[in-house]
Length: 502
Image 1: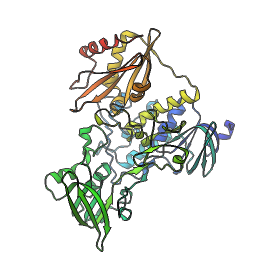
Image 2 (image 1 turned 135 degrees about the vertical axis):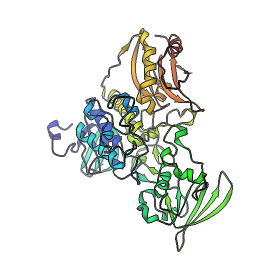
Image 3 (image 1 turned 90 degrees about the vertical axis):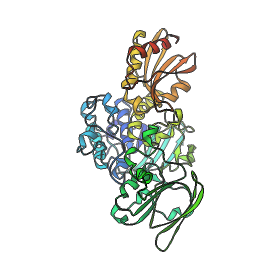
Image 4 (image 1 turned 90 degrees about the horizontal axis):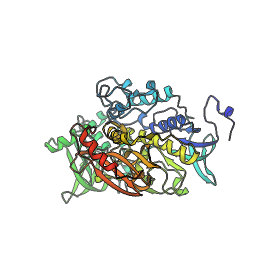
């Protein structure tokens, strides 16, 4: 390994050997680097960009985010509980490094602008001292007997563990005839350039409705199409559907305002002398339709810039757009390669009632990154982290307090859990863990609690018990104020705990 003195240059992290290399400088990479540093893990942080921010330097196109940060909330700004109301700030231990996005907001909305979000990310990097080697491009990857070699524009980096936090950053289009001649979401022009024009938007996820919402005052007519009906995340309680802030075009469609949300397969797109011809086949309502429009925009999403990772054996899914991952965000097929940031949505979790986690958003993956750093420190670097002992009479209170207040559980519903293991006559606090990991390979005897939404939309604490390696689930009663610390919940949970062997 290179001598530490060689690392103290104006430009940090020169080529050499490191235990861990992190690629990226968006919020996922910065959060991961910060957490590794707090654990004392030496690592190199590399980025092809010239400054921090990642995709928030450019997107969303129409500037306003769909995730909130509430400057005033039921919890004090900067406290752990406040993270539940601030979905955009990165996590830090010191108060002066916390809740930095609300600090940058001008108060006109509790949805920060893109510029306010970027300012919060930059402030986090500057105040916490997270330093990246910018303008250093990852070019190729090689497996070795003891890890990996990452070749970059600056030279070679050898490491035991490689973490890729490069985002779902590469525009993606499905294989539809003619779609190659259609601009992608990232190529959307200024809104006023669509004034008086008929616009056909392919895609009904957030980016599709974001474009429709931004173009609503300008376009003569809008068509928003994809095979499946729009899922509204205010109902699914996730970011998997269109967020409520983008639903004005949907309301316009329902109320007959002249814009249309269409369930249809896009069969082909052809250029015409005056614009485009879009041929579709109805799904919810069968039938063929032809649309003559001025503009077509493909709001069809993004993929991970995998480069040569598939050639190393990194398995992918979703048409190759995402790497398959374990519950701790490790490649399912190449041990030692991990992913952070939005790519963490490739670890899908249990998907209780079909609801995915929120790992594609900052409020989800910032919590994941903290767990990822701890996991790598223990599994690969032999760092033993404390697991405080918990007195049995206090266990029910601790679990119920987590279900009521823990931002990790509320930010990652059905995905993260507060876990405790039992053995040798005592209980140990395992901290926050991926729920799928606890269920599949947790302690032989233990208990975990998560927050879950049932099929009716009601929210409950869900208790998972491992008894001699077998798992059982208990759904506690709901509460209209989401407070589960009362006597009835304690009695219900205490009766479950007494059945677990210590």
